[in-house]
Image 1 (tube, rainbow, N blue to C red):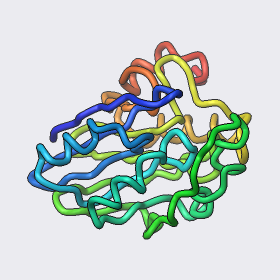
Image 2: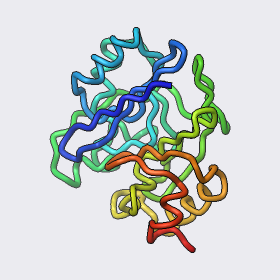
Image 3: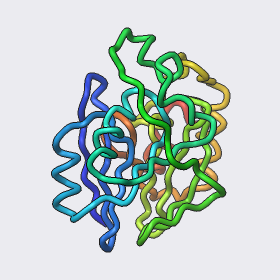
Length: 206
């Protein structure tokens, strides 16, 4: 699998373009940075946009991408309304001029998502936001965890719907559900591994 990391925007958010056997998906396109379009064109097209959650810095590029590529956006049902609501997606809190995004075409259903060559395990991991999800690709030993876990830290819980207790519970579930060698691609900062976070992240219970 090819993974292209694109860091952009005021929050320096990480979006990812993934390609596997001709299937291309984008995880959390935070802006309309040209690098997203360049990667998609290099891989030959786009099949879907997947959101780990719907905060403003993770959704800013979805409409520009949908304008060029007729693909669905997936989001957790708990945050379906957030794309058009600056109070919920955090744009208003930071006084940002964030235009309303069009509604997501689809919500995650069940515990598995299959798109072309991708088979993705879906884990609802609330805390940073009510509809946060972790997208785990077992065959590649990788997971895209949004703002749940960062290298030696975790996501904030002071935005709309945040819940510190729920976040810690989600971290504990990930520790139990994912293999320790899983590479974690976060919404901000460098990649890490679950094993490394178990050893050194102060938010993981020993």
